[in-house]
View 1 (cartoon, rainbow, N blue to C red):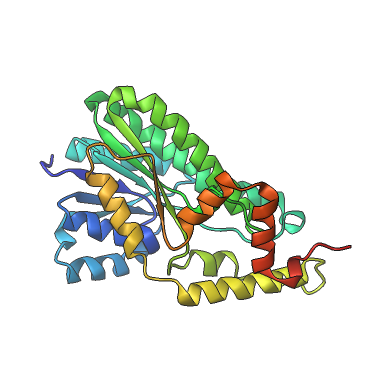
View 2: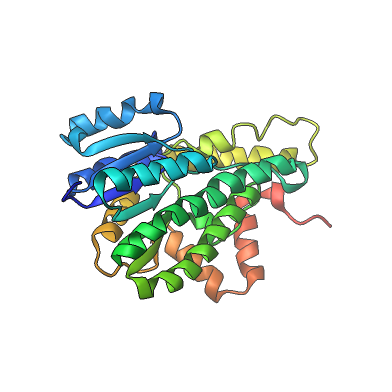
Length: 286
């Protein structure tokens, strides 16, 4: 048992999950930091030790695509500590490529990780939160969950699914004292885009070759200028400690403006803005 608020976080070996684990531990949470390969825990504990919170973090095996590890991790946490106050669904990756060329297995794997895994972890945690009539569930979405971009259809579709799921779940759970939150980051310095788009230029005979090269170049340019994820982590912490967190927390330069533009402008205008930014590779053919 623990008298500290307990946070259960997925995907903590790197990126937002790693930083959020340390930040929440600094705010007084005891953190169950889950990852599918515990051999990758060294960066997490290096940062935790630097911040003086290594004793507030425990690493637990969990693969969001393996229901057995989900059930075991959640049940063992509740049995040992008696509670889960905060769930942060962070695990995910970005699959890049053009719709015509991506095998259906890659689409399925994208959804298994980014959407169905998130649903499975949430369903495992809900009975424990509901029985205590208290809890917060933070789902890490993306600006790609509000707007689709070329070359990122699987990722964008999976995050759109997370958005709709979260809206429905929030309405279901508010009568039970549970708040559901979406964090919607723009571009930040993590490995997600580097990994997801690494193979974009590997098809020299592709009819989308020119567009692929442009997207890869733009992504690299954006990543080189992207800030560290401090703003995203601050939003996660803010939602975690709030008594009445709101549904959406858009985070990052231009994110709110992009969402507002999509809501207020005709789609044709939005389309032209995006295509102009992408350059001649996305000019409309005659």
